[in-house]
Image (cartoon, rainbow over all chains, first blue to last red; front, top):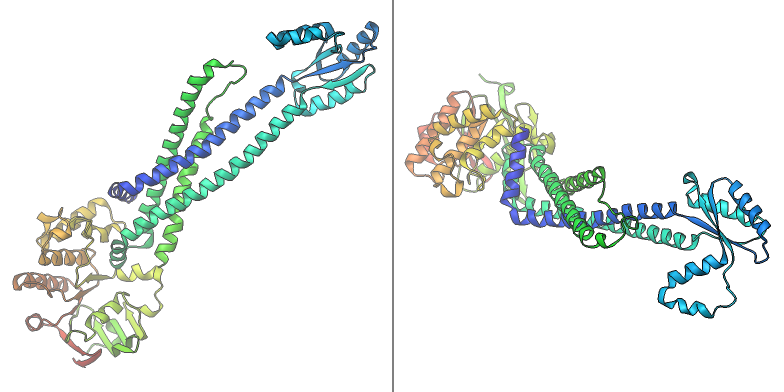
Amino acid sequence: MKSLLFKRALQDILNNRFLNTVTVITIALSVLIVSSFALFFTNANELLDTWKKGIRALVYLNPETTDANRLDLKYNIQKLNGVSEARFISRKEALAQMKVQMGRQSSLLESLKPNPLPDAFEVRLSPDSQTMAAIEKLSKAIELLPHVDEVEYGRQWIGKFTNIINMLRFVGYAMGGLFLVATLFIVANTVRLLLYSRQEEIAIMRLVGTTDRFIKMPFYIQGVILGALGGIIGMSGLYFAFWFVSEKFHRGLSAELLDIHFLPLDVTAGIIVGSMIIGWIGCYLSLKQFLKA
Amino acid sequence: MKCHDDALIRLFHVYKRYGAKNALFDISLDIFKNEFLFLTGPSGAGKSTLLKLLYLGESLSEGQILIDRMNLARVSRKRAPELRRKLGIIFQDYKLIPTKTVYENVSLVLEARGMSHKFIQKKVHSVLRTVGMEKRKKSFPPGLSGGEQQKVAVARAVVGEPKIILADEPTGSLDADSAGTIFDLLTNIHARGATVLVATHDAELIRSAKGRVIQLKEGKVVAE
Protein backbone atom coordinates (compact mmCIF):
# COMPACT_ATOMS: atom_id res chain seq x y z
CA MET A 1 0.00 0.00 0.00
CA LYS A 2 2.76 2.44 1.03
CA SER A 3 4.86 1.58 -2.01
CA LEU A 4 1.79 2.05 -4.18
CA LEU A 5 1.17 5.55 -2.81
CA PHE A 6 4.85 6.39 -3.21
CA LYS A 7 4.73 5.14 -6.80
CA ARG A 8 1.67 7.28 -7.49
CA ALA A 9 3.43 10.33 -6.02
CA LEU A 10 6.49 9.78 -8.23
CA GLN A 11 4.26 9.27 -11.24
CA ASP A 12 2.49 12.57 -10.49
CA ILE A 13 5.81 14.38 -10.25
CA LEU A 14 6.89 12.98 -13.63
CA ASN A 15 3.53 13.74 -15.23
CA ASN A 16 3.73 17.40 -14.15
CA ARG A 17 7.44 17.95 -14.69
CA PHE A 18 7.35 21.67 -15.49
CA LEU A 19 5.22 22.69 -12.51
CA ASN A 20 7.22 20.52 -10.13
CA THR A 21 10.56 21.74 -11.50
CA VAL A 22 9.51 25.37 -10.92
CA THR A 23 8.48 24.49 -7.37
CA VAL A 24 11.74 22.68 -6.64
CA ILE A 25 13.75 25.65 -8.00
CA THR A 26 11.73 28.07 -5.85
CA ILE A 27 12.26 25.97 -2.73
CA ALA A 28 15.96 25.62 -3.60
CA LEU A 29 16.37 29.40 -3.96
CA SER A 30 14.60 30.04 -0.66
CA VAL A 31 16.74 27.45 1.08
CA LEU A 32 19.83 28.96 -0.53
CA ILE A 33 19.00 32.46 0.73
CA VAL A 34 17.99 31.39 4.24
CA SER A 35 20.98 29.08 4.64
CA SER A 36 23.33 31.82 3.33
CA PHE A 37 22.23 33.90 6.29
CA ALA A 38 22.78 30.94 8.60
CA LEU A 39 26.26 30.43 7.14
CA PHE A 40 27.09 34.13 7.56
CA PHE A 41 25.94 34.20 11.19
CA THR A 42 27.73 31.02 12.12
CA ASN A 43 31.01 32.35 10.77
CA ALA A 44 30.46 35.92 12.04
CA ASN A 45 29.82 34.59 15.55
CA GLU A 46 32.92 32.48 15.48
CA LEU A 47 34.95 35.39 14.15
CA LEU A 48 33.62 37.57 16.93
CA ASP A 49 34.51 34.92 19.47
CA THR A 50 38.02 34.68 18.05
CA TRP A 51 38.42 38.45 18.23
CA LYS A 52 37.09 38.50 21.74
CA LYS A 53 39.64 35.88 22.70
CA GLY A 54 42.45 38.15 21.43
CA ILE A 55 41.22 41.05 23.56
CA ARG A 56 43.85 42.96 25.43
CA ALA A 57 43.60 46.11 27.49
CA LEU A 58 45.94 49.06 27.18
CA VAL A 59 46.53 50.85 30.47
CA TYR A 60 47.84 54.39 29.92
CA LEU A 61 49.86 55.90 32.73
CA ASN A 62 50.03 59.42 34.11
CA PRO A 63 53.00 61.42 32.80
CA GLU A 64 54.21 61.86 36.39
CA THR A 65 54.52 58.13 37.04
CA THR A 66 57.98 57.23 38.31
CA ASP A 67 59.79 53.92 37.69
CA ALA A 68 59.00 52.85 41.25
CA ASN A 69 55.32 53.67 40.77
CA ARG A 70 55.37 51.73 37.51
CA LEU A 71 56.76 48.61 39.25
CA ASP A 72 54.12 48.90 41.97
CA LEU A 73 51.42 49.31 39.37
CA LYS A 74 52.62 46.29 37.39
CA TYR A 75 52.55 44.24 40.59
CA ASN A 76 49.06 45.47 41.43
CA ILE A 77 47.74 44.75 37.91
CA GLN A 78 49.19 41.23 37.86
CA LYS A 79 47.60 40.58 41.24
CA LEU A 80 44.15 41.17 39.77
CA ASN A 81 41.98 38.17 39.00
CA GLY A 82 41.97 37.21 35.30
CA VAL A 83 45.24 38.86 34.29
CA SER A 84 47.76 36.57 32.67
CA GLU A 85 50.43 39.12 31.72
CA ALA A 86 51.12 42.87 31.98
CA ARG A 87 53.85 44.05 29.61
CA PHE A 88 55.24 47.55 29.85
CA ILE A 89 55.31 49.57 26.61
CA SER A 90 57.36 52.72 26.96
CA ARG A 91 56.29 55.87 25.12
CA LYS A 92 59.43 55.49 22.96
CA GLU A 93 58.50 51.92 21.99
CA ALA A 94 54.90 53.02 21.29
CA LEU A 95 56.09 55.73 18.91
CA ALA A 96 58.41 53.29 17.14
CA GLN A 97 55.49 50.82 16.73
CA MET A 98 53.31 53.60 15.39
CA LYS A 99 55.97 54.56 12.84
CA VAL A 100 56.09 50.95 11.62
CA GLN A 101 52.30 50.82 11.35
CA MET A 102 52.15 54.12 9.42
CA GLY A 103 54.77 53.01 6.92
CA ARG A 104 55.49 55.70 4.33
CA GLN A 105 53.48 58.29 6.23
CA SER A 106 55.69 57.86 9.29
CA SER A 107 57.57 61.02 8.33
CA LEU A 108 54.59 62.93 9.68
CA LEU A 109 55.60 61.78 13.15
CA GLU A 110 59.11 63.23 12.78
CA SER A 111 57.86 66.71 13.61
CA LEU A 112 56.17 65.49 16.80
CA LYS A 113 58.43 66.72 19.54
CA PRO A 114 58.18 65.95 22.36
CA ASN A 115 56.69 62.42 21.97
CA PRO A 116 52.96 62.84 22.78
CA LEU A 117 52.33 59.15 23.49
CA PRO A 118 52.06 58.00 27.13
CA ASP A 119 53.75 55.04 28.79
CA ALA A 120 51.41 52.06 28.95
CA PHE A 121 50.91 48.48 30.05
CA GLU A 122 49.54 45.90 27.63
CA VAL A 123 47.41 43.62 29.78
CA ARG A 124 46.54 40.12 28.45
CA LEU A 125 43.82 38.04 30.01
CA SER A 126 43.85 34.48 31.19
CA PRO A 127 41.82 32.13 28.85
CA ASP A 128 38.84 31.84 31.21
CA SER A 129 38.47 35.63 31.45
CA GLN A 130 38.35 36.38 27.71
CA THR A 131 34.81 37.66 27.65
CA MET A 132 33.48 41.16 27.22
CA ALA A 133 32.00 41.12 30.71
CA ALA A 134 35.26 40.01 32.31
CA ILE A 135 37.35 42.60 30.53
CA GLU A 136 34.92 45.36 31.39
CA LYS A 137 35.04 44.41 35.04
CA LEU A 138 38.83 44.19 34.98
CA SER A 139 39.17 47.56 33.23
CA LYS A 140 37.09 49.21 35.91
CA ALA A 141 39.30 47.66 38.60
CA ILE A 142 42.50 48.85 36.84
CA GLU A 143 41.09 52.35 36.39
CA LEU A 144 40.84 52.63 40.19
CA LEU A 145 44.54 51.91 40.66
CA PRO A 146 46.86 54.89 41.28
CA HIS A 147 48.80 56.44 38.34
CA VAL A 148 46.37 55.05 35.79
CA ASP A 149 45.16 57.67 33.37
CA GLU A 150 42.92 55.62 31.09
CA VAL A 151 42.14 52.02 30.16
CA GLU A 152 41.29 51.10 26.59
CA TYR A 153 40.26 47.70 25.30
CA GLY A 154 38.59 48.45 21.98
CA ARG A 155 35.10 47.97 23.45
CA GLN A 156 33.67 50.53 21.11
CA TRP A 157 34.40 48.72 17.87
CA ILE A 158 33.72 45.27 19.26
CA GLY A 159 30.45 46.57 20.65
CA LYS A 160 29.59 48.16 17.32
CA PHE A 161 30.44 44.99 15.44
CA THR A 162 28.30 42.96 17.83
CA ASN A 163 25.44 45.42 17.28
CA ILE A 164 25.78 45.11 13.49
CA ILE A 165 25.77 41.32 13.75
CA ASN A 166 22.69 41.44 15.97
CA MET A 167 20.93 43.77 13.56
CA LEU A 168 21.83 41.54 10.62
CA ARG A 169 20.60 38.56 12.62
CA PHE A 170 17.26 40.30 13.01
CA VAL A 171 17.17 41.04 9.27
CA GLY A 172 18.09 37.40 8.67
CA TYR A 173 15.24 36.13 10.83
CA ALA A 174 12.80 38.51 9.12
CA MET A 175 13.96 37.50 5.64
CA GLY A 176 14.01 33.83 6.62
CA GLY A 177 10.42 34.19 7.82
CA LEU A 178 9.37 35.94 4.62
CA PHE A 179 11.01 33.32 2.42
CA LEU A 180 9.39 30.59 4.51
CA VAL A 181 5.96 32.10 3.95
CA ALA A 182 6.68 32.68 0.25
CA THR A 183 7.84 29.08 -0.19
CA LEU A 184 4.80 27.77 1.66
CA PHE A 185 2.59 29.86 -0.58
CA ILE A 186 4.29 28.60 -3.75
CA VAL A 187 4.14 24.93 -2.71
CA ALA A 188 0.48 25.35 -1.71
CA ASN A 189 -0.27 26.95 -5.09
CA THR A 190 1.55 24.23 -7.01
CA VAL A 191 -0.46 21.57 -5.24
CA ARG A 192 -3.63 23.57 -5.85
CA LEU A 193 -2.85 23.74 -9.58
CA LEU A 194 -2.21 19.99 -9.59
CA LEU A 195 -5.48 19.43 -7.77
CA TYR A 196 -7.40 21.58 -10.25
CA SER A 197 -5.82 19.77 -13.18
CA ARG A 198 -6.96 16.49 -11.62
CA GLN A 199 -10.35 17.63 -10.42
CA GLU A 200 -12.22 15.17 -12.64
CA GLU A 201 -9.97 12.29 -11.62
CA ILE A 202 -10.46 13.06 -7.92
CA ALA A 203 -14.24 13.27 -8.40
CA ILE A 204 -14.24 9.84 -10.10
CA MET A 205 -12.01 8.37 -7.39
CA ARG A 206 -14.47 9.56 -4.77
CA LEU A 207 -17.39 8.05 -6.68
CA VAL A 208 -15.76 4.62 -6.74
CA GLY A 209 -15.31 4.69 -2.98
CA THR A 210 -11.79 5.98 -2.34
CA THR A 211 -11.30 7.82 0.91
CA ASP A 212 -9.91 11.35 1.16
CA ARG A 213 -6.86 9.90 2.89
CA PHE A 214 -6.14 7.71 -0.13
CA ILE A 215 -6.43 10.76 -2.39
CA LYS A 216 -4.32 12.98 -0.11
CA MET A 217 -1.39 10.68 0.64
CA PRO A 218 0.36 10.87 -2.77
CA PHE A 219 0.13 14.67 -2.62
CA TYR A 220 1.74 14.71 0.82
CA ILE A 221 4.48 12.37 -0.36
CA GLN A 222 4.92 14.60 -3.41
CA GLY A 223 5.20 17.72 -1.20
CA VAL A 224 7.83 16.07 0.99
CA ILE A 225 9.80 14.89 -2.07
CA LEU A 226 9.68 18.39 -3.61
CA GLY A 227 10.80 19.86 -0.26
CA ALA A 228 13.66 17.36 0.02
CA LEU A 229 14.80 17.99 -3.56
CA GLY A 230 14.60 21.77 -3.09
CA GLY A 231 16.49 21.50 0.22
CA ILE A 232 19.24 19.30 -1.20
CA ILE A 233 19.68 21.45 -4.33
CA GLY A 234 19.65 24.68 -2.27
CA MET A 235 22.22 23.36 0.18
CA SER A 236 24.38 21.96 -2.65
CA GLY A 237 24.23 25.38 -4.33
CA LEU A 238 25.32 27.03 -1.10
CA TYR A 239 28.14 24.52 -0.67
CA PHE A 240 29.46 25.17 -4.18
CA ALA A 241 29.19 28.94 -3.71
CA PHE A 242 31.01 28.59 -0.39
CA TRP A 243 33.68 26.38 -1.93
CA PHE A 244 34.15 28.83 -4.82
CA VAL A 245 34.41 31.87 -2.54
CA SER A 246 36.73 30.20 -0.06
CA GLU A 247 38.96 28.87 -2.85
CA LYS A 248 39.08 32.21 -4.65
CA PHE A 249 39.39 34.65 -1.76
CA HIS A 250 40.33 32.77 1.33
CA ARG A 251 43.83 31.95 0.08
CA GLY A 252 44.72 35.61 0.01
CA LEU A 253 43.76 36.12 3.65
CA SER A 254 45.43 34.98 6.79
CA ALA A 255 43.87 31.72 7.99
CA GLU A 256 43.85 33.09 11.52
CA LEU A 257 42.13 36.31 10.50
CA LEU A 258 39.29 34.66 8.60
CA ASP A 259 38.86 30.97 9.31
CA ILE A 260 35.51 30.36 7.57
CA HIS A 261 33.87 26.97 7.31
CA PHE A 262 30.60 25.44 6.05
CA LEU A 263 27.52 24.80 8.18
CA PRO A 264 27.75 21.79 10.49
CA LEU A 265 26.17 18.55 9.24
CA ASP A 266 23.33 18.65 11.78
CA VAL A 267 22.35 22.20 10.73
CA THR A 268 22.50 21.18 7.04
CA ALA A 269 20.30 18.16 7.74
CA GLY A 270 17.97 20.34 9.81
CA ILE A 271 17.52 22.79 6.91
CA ILE A 272 16.70 19.94 4.49
CA VAL A 273 14.22 18.43 6.97
CA GLY A 274 12.73 21.92 7.43
CA SER A 275 12.23 22.27 3.70
CA MET A 276 10.51 18.84 3.64
CA ILE A 277 8.18 20.03 6.41
CA ILE A 278 7.40 23.16 4.36
CA GLY A 279 6.49 20.91 1.42
CA TRP A 280 4.17 18.93 3.68
CA ILE A 281 2.50 22.01 5.18
CA GLY A 282 2.05 23.53 1.70
CA CYS A 283 0.18 20.38 0.66
CA TYR A 284 -1.84 20.35 3.85
CA LEU A 285 -3.06 23.91 3.30
CA SER A 286 -4.16 23.24 -0.29
CA LEU A 287 -5.70 19.84 0.33
CA LYS A 288 -7.63 21.05 3.33
CA GLN A 289 -9.23 23.80 1.29
CA PHE A 290 -9.71 21.78 -1.92
CA LEU A 291 -11.16 18.57 -0.51
CA LYS A 292 -13.58 20.47 1.68
CA ALA A 293 -15.29 21.63 -1.50
CA MET B 1 -44.09 -12.71 0.42
CA LYS B 2 -41.28 -10.23 0.98
CA CYS B 3 -41.72 -7.64 3.73
CA HIS B 4 -40.17 -4.16 4.10
CA ASP B 5 -37.49 -5.44 6.47
CA ASP B 6 -36.02 -7.66 3.73
CA ALA B 7 -35.43 -4.67 1.50
CA LEU B 8 -31.80 -3.84 0.71
CA ILE B 9 -32.73 -0.41 -0.62
CA ARG B 10 -35.73 1.52 0.74
CA LEU B 11 -37.00 4.88 -0.47
CA PHE B 12 -39.58 6.75 1.67
CA HIS B 13 -41.42 9.66 0.07
CA VAL B 14 -38.33 10.83 -1.75
CA TYR B 15 -38.34 14.25 -3.37
CA LYS B 16 -35.61 15.90 -5.40
CA ARG B 17 -36.06 19.50 -6.46
CA TYR B 18 -33.92 21.71 -8.67
CA GLY B 19 -35.21 25.15 -7.82
CA ALA B 20 -38.99 25.05 -8.30
CA LYS B 21 -38.86 21.98 -10.55
CA ASN B 22 -39.54 18.54 -9.05
CA ALA B 23 -37.09 16.05 -10.59
CA LEU B 24 -38.47 13.30 -8.31
CA PHE B 25 -41.87 13.49 -6.67
CA ASP B 26 -42.86 11.37 -3.67
CA ILE B 27 -41.08 8.16 -4.61
CA SER B 28 -41.48 5.23 -2.23
CA LEU B 29 -39.86 1.99 -3.25
CA ASP B 30 -38.41 -1.23 -1.80
CA ILE B 31 -35.67 -3.07 -3.68
CA PHE B 32 -34.84 -6.50 -2.36
CA LYS B 33 -31.64 -8.48 -2.11
CA ASN B 34 -30.64 -10.17 -5.39
CA GLU B 35 -33.36 -8.41 -7.29
CA PHE B 36 -32.92 -7.36 -10.93
CA LEU B 37 -34.80 -4.13 -11.33
CA PHE B 38 -35.26 -1.82 -14.28
CA LEU B 39 -36.02 1.85 -13.95
CA THR B 40 -37.49 2.97 -17.20
CA GLY B 41 -39.22 5.95 -18.70
CA PRO B 42 -38.58 8.70 -21.21
CA SER B 43 -35.65 11.14 -21.01
CA GLY B 44 -36.07 13.51 -18.08
CA ALA B 45 -38.28 11.04 -16.17
CA GLY B 46 -35.86 11.07 -13.22
CA LYS B 47 -34.10 7.70 -13.69
CA SER B 48 -30.57 9.08 -13.50
CA THR B 49 -31.51 11.45 -10.67
CA LEU B 50 -32.80 8.52 -8.64
CA LEU B 51 -29.53 6.61 -9.15
CA LYS B 52 -27.53 9.73 -8.24
CA LEU B 53 -29.40 9.95 -4.95
CA LEU B 54 -28.47 6.34 -4.23
CA TYR B 55 -24.73 6.87 -4.65
CA LEU B 56 -24.77 10.34 -3.01
CA GLY B 57 -24.08 12.05 -6.31
CA GLU B 58 -26.95 14.35 -5.34
CA SER B 59 -28.52 15.12 -1.99
CA LEU B 60 -32.14 14.50 -1.11
CA SER B 61 -34.58 17.42 -0.94
CA GLU B 62 -37.07 15.51 1.19
CA GLY B 63 -37.73 11.96 2.35
CA GLN B 64 -35.37 9.17 3.35
CA ILE B 65 -33.31 6.48 1.65
CA LEU B 66 -31.94 3.42 3.42
CA ILE B 67 -29.28 1.31 1.76
CA ASP B 68 -28.22 -1.80 3.65
CA ARG B 69 -29.52 -0.06 6.78
CA MET B 70 -27.47 3.10 6.15
CA ASN B 71 -29.64 6.21 6.23
CA LEU B 72 -28.33 8.35 3.39
CA ALA B 73 -29.77 11.53 4.86
CA ARG B 74 -27.45 11.04 7.82
CA VAL B 75 -24.34 9.81 6.02
CA SER B 76 -21.54 12.33 6.53
CA ARG B 77 -19.05 13.15 3.79
CA LYS B 78 -16.49 11.09 5.71
CA ARG B 79 -18.72 8.01 5.59
CA ALA B 80 -19.59 8.36 1.91
CA PRO B 81 -16.75 6.00 0.82
CA GLU B 82 -18.19 3.33 3.13
CA LEU B 83 -21.53 3.52 1.30
CA ARG B 84 -19.95 3.70 -2.15
CA ARG B 85 -17.96 0.55 -1.49
CA LYS B 86 -21.23 -1.33 -1.17
CA LEU B 87 -22.07 -0.13 -4.67
CA GLY B 88 -20.70 -0.82 -8.12
CA ILE B 89 -21.65 2.07 -10.35
CA ILE B 90 -21.78 2.00 -14.14
CA PHE B 91 -22.11 5.58 -15.31
CA GLN B 92 -23.83 6.65 -18.49
CA ASP B 93 -20.70 8.59 -19.52
CA TYR B 94 -18.40 5.77 -18.20
CA LYS B 95 -16.39 8.14 -15.94
CA LEU B 96 -13.06 6.47 -16.60
CA ILE B 97 -9.91 8.34 -15.64
CA PRO B 98 -8.38 9.29 -19.00
CA THR B 99 -4.79 9.46 -17.71
CA LYS B 100 -4.88 5.96 -16.25
CA THR B 101 -4.70 2.70 -18.17
CA VAL B 102 -7.58 0.23 -18.31
CA TYR B 103 -5.80 -1.88 -15.66
CA GLU B 104 -5.22 1.14 -13.39
CA ASN B 105 -8.83 2.30 -13.71
CA VAL B 106 -10.10 -1.08 -12.56
CA SER B 107 -7.43 -1.72 -9.92
CA LEU B 108 -8.08 1.66 -8.27
CA VAL B 109 -11.19 0.27 -6.53
CA LEU B 110 -9.17 -2.48 -4.84
CA GLU B 111 -6.15 -0.28 -4.13
CA ALA B 112 -8.41 2.13 -2.24
CA ARG B 113 -9.52 -0.79 -0.08
CA GLY B 114 -5.93 -1.61 0.81
CA MET B 115 -5.84 -5.00 -0.93
CA SER B 116 -2.48 -6.66 -1.54
CA HIS B 117 -0.70 -6.13 -4.84
CA LYS B 118 -0.87 -9.84 -5.62
CA PHE B 119 -4.61 -10.06 -4.96
CA ILE B 120 -5.28 -6.94 -7.03
CA GLN B 121 -3.29 -8.30 -9.96
CA LYS B 122 -5.12 -11.62 -9.90
CA LYS B 123 -8.58 -10.15 -9.47
CA VAL B 124 -8.22 -7.38 -12.06
CA HIS B 125 -6.88 -9.77 -14.70
CA SER B 126 -9.74 -12.15 -14.02
CA VAL B 127 -12.38 -9.41 -14.34
CA LEU B 128 -10.79 -7.95 -17.46
CA ARG B 129 -10.75 -11.44 -18.98
CA THR B 130 -14.47 -11.80 -18.20
CA VAL B 131 -15.34 -8.55 -19.97
CA GLY B 132 -12.96 -9.34 -22.83
CA MET B 133 -10.61 -6.43 -22.16
CA GLU B 134 -7.51 -8.23 -20.89
CA LYS B 135 -5.57 -7.61 -24.07
CA ARG B 136 -6.25 -3.89 -23.82
CA LYS B 137 -5.25 -3.53 -20.19
CA LYS B 138 -2.43 -1.11 -21.03
CA SER B 139 -4.60 1.12 -23.23
CA PHE B 140 -5.86 4.48 -22.11
CA PRO B 141 -9.65 5.21 -22.21
CA PRO B 142 -9.48 7.88 -24.95
CA GLY B 143 -8.07 5.20 -27.27
CA LEU B 144 -11.02 2.83 -26.70
CA SER B 145 -14.37 2.61 -28.48
CA GLY B 146 -17.60 3.40 -26.58
CA GLY B 147 -18.34 -0.29 -26.17
CA GLU B 148 -14.84 -1.00 -24.84
CA GLN B 149 -15.05 1.88 -22.38
CA GLN B 150 -18.41 0.57 -21.20
CA LYS B 151 -16.87 -2.88 -20.62
CA VAL B 152 -14.08 -1.31 -18.56
CA ALA B 153 -16.70 0.62 -16.58
CA VAL B 154 -18.52 -2.67 -15.91
CA ALA B 155 -15.23 -4.32 -14.88
CA ARG B 156 -14.56 -1.49 -12.46
CA ALA B 157 -18.08 -1.75 -11.03
CA VAL B 158 -17.87 -5.48 -10.35
CA VAL B 159 -14.22 -5.94 -9.35
CA GLY B 160 -14.92 -5.10 -5.71
CA GLU B 161 -17.81 -7.63 -5.62
CA PRO B 162 -20.33 -5.06 -4.37
CA LYS B 163 -23.74 -5.96 -2.98
CA ILE B 164 -25.49 -3.56 -5.35
CA ILE B 165 -24.87 -2.64 -8.98
CA LEU B 166 -26.26 0.67 -10.21
CA ALA B 167 -26.17 0.96 -13.99
CA ASP B 168 -27.21 4.17 -15.73
CA GLU B 169 -28.07 3.51 -19.40
CA PRO B 170 -25.41 0.80 -19.63
CA THR B 171 -26.22 0.05 -23.26
CA GLY B 172 -27.20 3.58 -24.23
CA SER B 173 -24.63 4.27 -26.92
CA LEU B 174 -23.73 0.72 -27.87
CA ASP B 175 -24.41 -1.44 -30.92
CA ALA B 176 -26.52 -4.57 -30.46
CA ASP B 177 -23.54 -6.92 -30.00
CA SER B 178 -21.84 -4.75 -27.38
CA ALA B 179 -25.16 -4.17 -25.62
CA GLY B 180 -25.67 -7.95 -25.52
CA THR B 181 -22.24 -8.49 -23.96
CA ILE B 182 -22.85 -5.84 -21.30
CA PHE B 183 -26.27 -7.30 -20.54
CA ASP B 184 -24.80 -10.82 -20.22
CA LEU B 185 -22.27 -9.43 -17.75
CA LEU B 186 -25.01 -7.84 -15.67
CA THR B 187 -27.03 -11.06 -15.58
CA ASN B 188 -23.89 -12.95 -14.54
CA ILE B 189 -23.30 -10.56 -11.66
CA HIS B 190 -26.94 -10.90 -10.67
CA ALA B 191 -26.64 -14.69 -10.76
CA ARG B 192 -23.77 -14.43 -8.31
CA GLY B 193 -26.03 -12.72 -5.75
CA ALA B 194 -25.80 -9.02 -6.47
CA THR B 195 -28.79 -6.70 -6.56
CA VAL B 196 -28.86 -4.99 -9.96
CA LEU B 197 -30.61 -1.72 -10.63
CA VAL B 198 -30.58 -0.62 -14.27
CA ALA B 199 -31.86 2.73 -15.48
CA THR B 200 -32.66 2.40 -19.18
CA HIS B 201 -35.14 3.27 -21.87
CA ASP B 202 -33.96 0.34 -24.00
CA ALA B 203 -37.23 -1.60 -24.41
CA GLU B 204 -35.42 -4.53 -26.07
CA LEU B 205 -33.16 -4.94 -23.06
CA ILE B 206 -36.11 -4.88 -20.66
CA ARG B 207 -38.04 -7.45 -22.72
CA SER B 208 -35.10 -9.87 -22.82
CA ALA B 209 -34.55 -9.79 -19.05
CA LYS B 210 -36.56 -11.27 -16.22
CA GLY B 211 -36.78 -8.44 -13.77
CA ARG B 212 -39.11 -6.04 -12.07
CA VAL B 213 -39.78 -2.89 -14.05
CA ILE B 214 -40.50 0.47 -12.48
CA GLN B 215 -41.74 3.07 -14.88
CA LEU B 216 -41.09 6.73 -14.13
CA LYS B 217 -42.61 9.76 -15.76
CA GLU B 218 -41.96 13.37 -14.80
CA GLY B 219 -40.38 12.26 -11.56
CA LYS B 220 -43.22 9.98 -10.44
CA VAL B 221 -43.67 6.21 -10.42
CA VAL B 222 -46.42 5.61 -12.96
CA ALA B 223 -46.31 1.83 -13.30
CA GLU B 224 -44.76 -1.17 -11.59
